[in-house]
Length: 256
Image (cartoon, rainbow, N blue to C red; front, side, top):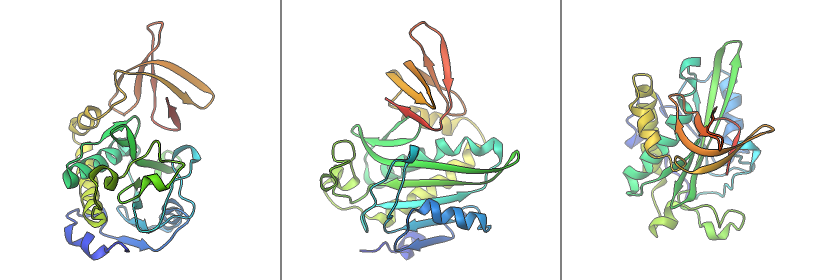
């Protein structure tokens, strides 16, 4: 059954996030659609939603399983200042986790930098792509893929590592309710992130990565050590075996 955008709007309390909601039956990727529209000047907070993606993608160019009518595939067009750009990688996974908790009672954790997990399995992924114009931000595309009613066991390539709300709860979940709350929480957190450390602390408290020994690959460089903390901008602070510390920015990073 197609998502009912009228029900989403009924529960939407946000002032600008999702007030323009464009629903598509199919798209190669909501990131592709949003990029073209962002270039054309759509306002901040516009959301592009697809019932299915024929070429959905996640971070590092990985594909994202996007069957029709089961999940949420969306991209938000944001136009932050350079100073607020880094907050998106904190706000997006936290808003997703909080929306899931508030609508289902499940308590997701976050794998740094921004995968949303339940029971150690991936529930949602975030892809943020930014276009710069000189020293300023033209736009940022915040892509979110959230497994809602996906029958994970029928998708062999992710069956061992992914989960869905339906799998965790044993019943189908209203995509409309989850989406409306996700957009509500995104706006609240985005505005609050500019005012203090509370959003950062809420994000940090859900990080299951901290306190673990990890292997981080970024570009051609590999670092191993203890995931000791994160800084105010969301970068990971890693303590190497020799006792030295290195700070790794959230970006094109693979965490093991």
